[in-house]
Amino acid sequence: MFDIAVYFYQNYGISMDDIAFERHQVGFNVFIREKGIHLYMRFWDYTKGRDGLPDKCVILVTASFKSHEKRHVCSLAKFLNQVALRYGYDFLAVENNPELNEHLNLMQVPVRHSTCFCAPFGEELAEQLED
Image (spheres, one colour):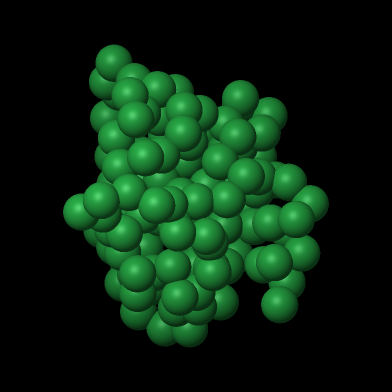
């Protein structure tokens, strides 16, 4: 959580007090609604198969920036790709948000009644985010 707070402070001037962290049984959620940013992401240790997503997954639900959205979404994904592995997370996912995934181009998870996308963290994702 500290790394997330530092990232948003350094890049957007958002203080830790303006970031809501919610702990729960399977991990924690992050909410930001400040300075033109609307962000909701989940750090889940266990997904219990929800939407076909794997365990140890960082899930972007909403990531909206008031300007240069693609650049900011890709920058956030690059940051997550660098730090999430250190904390035991293996995958980046976008949950039921095809418009958000247009910025990242993650592979669709084949699940009925869902449009989730997912990719493992690592070099391949880093290269994909450079395109």
